[in-house]
Image (cartoon, rainbow, N blue to C red):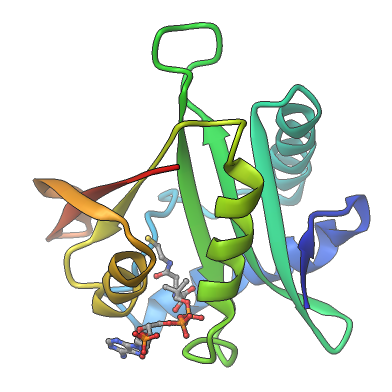
Length: 170
Ligand SMILES: CC(C)(COP(=O)(O)OP(=O)(O)OC[C@H]1O[C@@H](n2cnc3c(N)ncnc32)[C@H](O)[C@@H]1OP(=O)(O)O)[C@@H](O)C(=O)NCCC(=O)NCCS
């Protein structure tokens, strides 16, 4: 089931986020950028309340994928610098827990967030590791267009990753 975020999703979302830090140990190319130290629980509560505040203020949207009563994925968009000439665009992020990928949940969450973004934002944009072909396939299929490549944008230990930037006109 794809639905909008709820207050009581906090625990599942923190567990999912921490699972990505665990996954990084065996998957050095994992396609989201991480803090060098895993944020503690109180930082997670701060992140979650900040996200809700942005939603209430009309500056963010968040949808989740729920399977058997557990939240297994999150897709959110955040308005770029509210109150400035940049604020007609929003930045999108998405991640699904291991075991639930490649089943179409990413596409469903993105379609839902695109639908909710209409009338609120004019442009969505995102950044994706150039090695993340699954994500790039998905974004292209939904109509996102590549507009630049930022070489060595991510430094993970002694390895560098390029970030491709893409946009979608709502
Ligand atoms: C990227 C992510 C959100 C995609 O969601 P998903 O539910 O796995 O993707 P979907 O099943 O909706 O679709 C993926 C597309 O890639 C294709 N695909 C699946 N596995 C693939 C692989 N290993 N390599 C290349 N393409 C692949 C699918 O066939 C599908 O394309 P199609 O619909 O044209 O056939 C999800 O895999 C994820 O959370 N990954 C880890 C975190 C991450 O990388 N986030 C993105 C940060 S920018």
